[in-house]
Length: 66
Image (cartoon, rainbow, N blue to C red; front, side):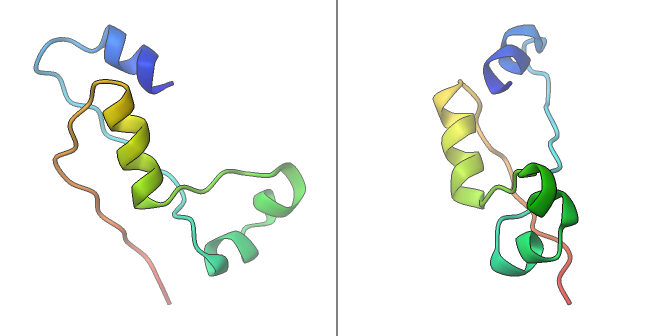
């Protein structure tokens, strides 16, 4: 997905991504994770995916919590 977004993004364009964060609580409390293996990503996962596909990350923000 990152490769295709990078390919079609205009030069100087920005890509915003929102995804479930990977930690024990977020996976445990997400019924979709239990039933269909809904994916959750850590900041390191996202850095790796972005950097391996030509993106530079300006900011990662982790929101939510208890």
